[in-house]
Length: 339
Image (cartoon, rainbow, N blue to C red; front, side, top):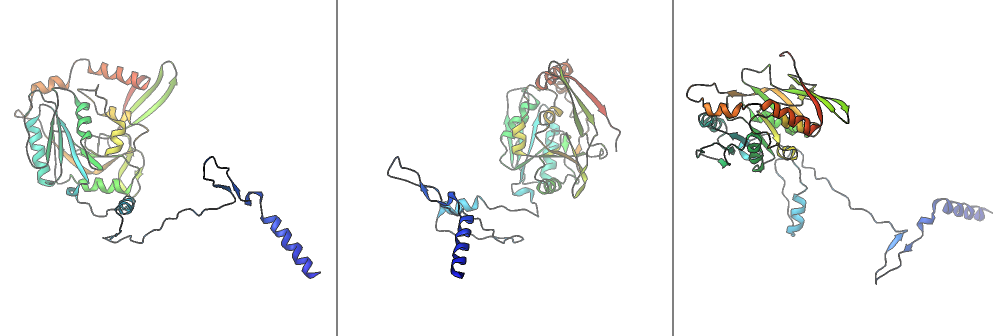
């Protein structure tokens, strides 16, 4: 009776644990090959983590170049010390009829970051050749425009990040690009981080964008509120989330290329880039990274530049472009008091 009891127990246990799916079935071959479709379990490949966190070097050897390249493609690292001159980023700008200001800017860049690559998109009417260490000047057809120049400059970037500046800015002791890099590396979701114009730390020229949904016929309204920021970045109390920043910003190259710059905006345009990127890019602004702004003088003032800078009816054209591209019935502006 005891043997019978154990036999029945084993039989019941087998019935409870076995399944119809455990039966080995083979697919009937349409070729000399057949393969199992049921009842056969293959262990998946597993990954192995190498404990090298915190070390400065990692040595990898392999007898196969293919395997070695595949492994290197999956190696990730985090920098804790940033050297701007080692290929982390390139510096971009577009220039038009402002060579005196451009030369001052380039001299200041050479002073603080002598090894950084500078890419210049130049659509001046009578181009002047700019030479110097690590300078790449791309001559465009005359007066192609502000955003067309941005597209050209960004298309030549080969680094993970790029820094955008206007051609009448000037680097100072407070232009610490390393601080931008620390923020971007610490917050991988961030796409753009902007700074301040020196002497205007309280007003970083940032703005938020609010969309009020409308109907299918007329569209909605876009409200642009200057000086508006949201909550601070974690671990960076001097930086806050926003929607748009000043013309001095560090950006992820791939993120900016996804959005692009509308070449229809030839003479005046900046915030339109952030309008096009709304919902596609995460943007922040920081108080502690500044760049100088050159003063206008008789020597650097070019009347022809002002003619192109402020063409007639530019406001009407921009409004029409906003309405058509974004299906809007209105764009409203609001200003927040300085912090």
